[in-house]
Image 1 (spheres, rainbow, N blue to C red):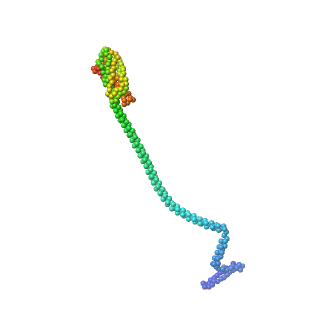
Image 2: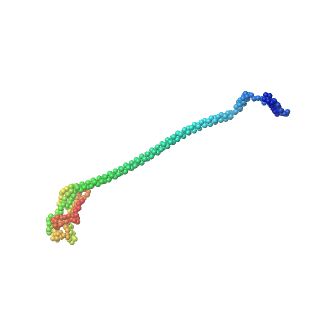
Image 3: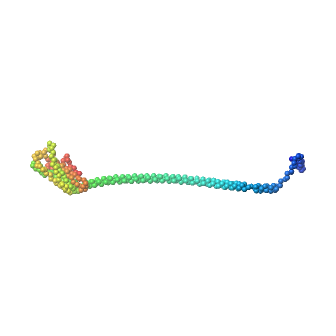
Length: 303
């Protein structure tokens, strides 16, 4: 190997070249200066050679790489657009959510209002039902009261217009004497304003002595006659046996009693479903003879 040394004595002096080479070393050539133009041409030539050396696989790989880069770029663009859309959509979604909340609130208020209206309607129906029930009850009560008044008026009218049979008089034809038959006439009158139909009456003569023994004689009359308003009917009762001195003594004895009971039955033309009755009891009174007065025990009954 050889070594070359350059020495400078001063600025203007030329360099001094000295070489040291061992005797056994090979000779080394001097370095030539590089031309830039030739260097560029050489690099281009070498690049062309490298390109020529690329096979089909490497070209395909390169193209695939560019495609992947493009896809990634498009993906980034799509992601950016999607993010922008999501940001815009989130604002719209929030607005829609607020609108939905407002609408739900309004619907809730409408539902509450509908419930209140329904409850008010039910209350009104219940109130109307109560009013109708009260009105029906009042009407029923009024009808019952009116019916009672009408029935009372009808009853009063019937009582005023119906037939009334009463015993107007009961008396002996003459003073009771020994060896005579007992003769008693009875006057029955219709004091009502309508006829009495199917008039039938029965009578019983009672002799109650002072010692407590009692004798009865019964009979009937009328035989289904019709007695108009204000009309009268006279029935004559006659004993079958003559009166003895003992009978007169018993009749005149204050401790004994002599009375006649009468039962009259008839139909009222205003109500033929019910049979009317009149009960009368007449007692013979010595001071008032020949009349019979109303018995205190039997009384006078008309229905």
